[in-house]
Amino acid sequence: MRTKRLRRALVAGLAGLLAGAGLTALPGTAHAADTLASAAAAKGRYFGTAVAANHLGESAYVSTLNREFGSVTAENEMKWDATEPSRGNFTFGAGDRIVGHAQSRGMDVRGHTLVWHSQLPGWVSGLGANDLRSAMNNHITRVMQHYQGEIHSWDVVNEAFQDGGSGARRNSVFQNKLGDGWIEEAFRTARAADPNAKLCYNDYNTDGVNAKSNAVYNLVRDLKSRGVPIDCVGFQSHFNSASPVPSDYRANLQRFADLGVEVQITELDIEGSGSSQAASYARVVDACLAVSRCTGITVWGVTDKYSWRSGGTPLLFDGNYAKKPAYHSVLSALGGSGGGDDGGGDAGCSVSYTKTREWSDRFNGQVTVTAGSRPISGWTVTVTVTPPQKVSATWNGSPTWDSSGNVMTMRPNGNGNLSAGASTSFGFTVMKNGNSAAPVLGGCTAS
Ligand code: G3I
Image (tube, rainbow, N blue to C red):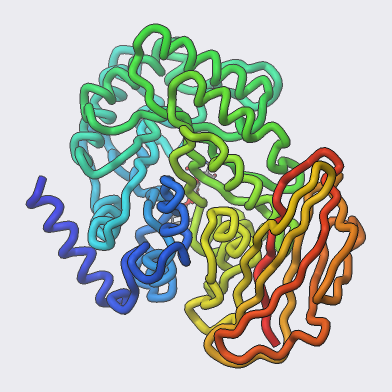
């Protein structure tokens, strides 16, 4: 094992040098809680991203990855078509590059995925039942043993249920040829292959309470009650306007956690931009932090430009690796601070929020704006409240409002000039109307 790790670290170290990554700090070692990884770690969570091996030679990609993230998932490189393209011939090169890079930077690795109906090489679909069973078990065993001790959690089975209201199993080669027991068999084989890895079931459109998540819930409850080894459930959390963050997201995570499994947010991305995207991201982070068995969050990519949904700009860094409002709201929801430096330049200011007073029907909030490493002559900060909350008063700033009345854009009211590192603050009163949620900050832009 040590030899394998050393070899991977050397390979990754070389790639990192070529990418100029040696100039960046390990996650969490630069400043306290001013990166996603360090802020999440301070809350006992990991914050990860999907990584594609073919981008590990791009310096801005690597420096952003190294600075911000504490866990990685191979976006495609550990899937069946990548690891066993023909029967019994295993190819781990691209996956090993990702693991080596992670190890050289002290990051954890999630494993994705062992048994999935998609990205499955053609030879698997042609097998008869007995052959398919032994091919599935052999695949799980060989891949897990290759990465033994290097992966904290594996998506053993991915997306085994149909969309729609039926709650039925997906019509896959595994389901059709092996019957309902294939999931149980996959988990038992996985436990035997690497007893120390956490074994997860992973799916999408299971983020709120619905027929599909009910079906997964019943599966997990059944597996747990019969002693079948399952340790975690992954909630992919791919969101867009047609499929927004559900209002019962936290409650759904909690009901799975109450079955005695960890819950992990495994492939988070949210299409959109600006303060509404930022507010949705913060809701996801808040939900994970509210569930003690929610152990970590992985976003499905570093930058919008390489997202599988690039048109939807669903990630935390834009195509130039600049931090988006969503980045700042995630960092703030994680309890982190700062984050004014986007790696390619100085965003000029940073913000932090405190609740200064609270009554039964309202609370006062204060936002502190701090200039970065140069003086500024103005700043813009967005503050989003959760309906039916309403802001009833503001001070020390000039607010404007979006059409919903939920997003307040605050600019200076005589307090725009700040020398480098200096701070000012503005305040506001939020009428709760039954909801005590903290407002979401959309980051700070200096002028
Ligand atoms: O690497 C080849 C390249 O050589 C070729 O020229 C090109 C032409 O199509 O294809 C490239 O492969 C693509 C691969 O991504 C790498 O970019 C595949 O076509 C493409 O299908 C594949 O898409 C991946 C998708 O899973 C496949 O189902 C996405 O990158 C990946 O983000 C996505 O991830 C899934 C999770 O595994 C499971 N949950 C949903 C999630 C989003 O769909």
